[in-house]
Image (cartoon, rainbow, N blue to C red; front, side):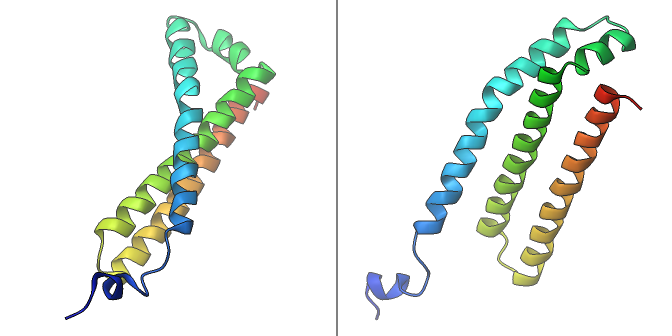
Length: 124
């Protein structure tokens, strides 16, 4: 028979978890206005040709906001999926493989997205 305190000892502290919680909330906060802006921009450009889209995309502010959106989006996705895997996958080898896949997958998709945006916005 163990006390409740004995059951939780050795399971770490909650200090690092609050940092992850805040990071996820801050990326969500950044994504909210950026998502509204990007949806509005896309909807207002419906019916435009590629030249008009490229002109819009090549504006420095637009390009910077889209890249910020991509970084925040993939960082938020990575943190969210990592949390789900850590909480619900209990087989350690499977958990490690999934965590590596999430990190590499979100990194490469983020880089691919930024390169694609730069190719359209800057030229190529």
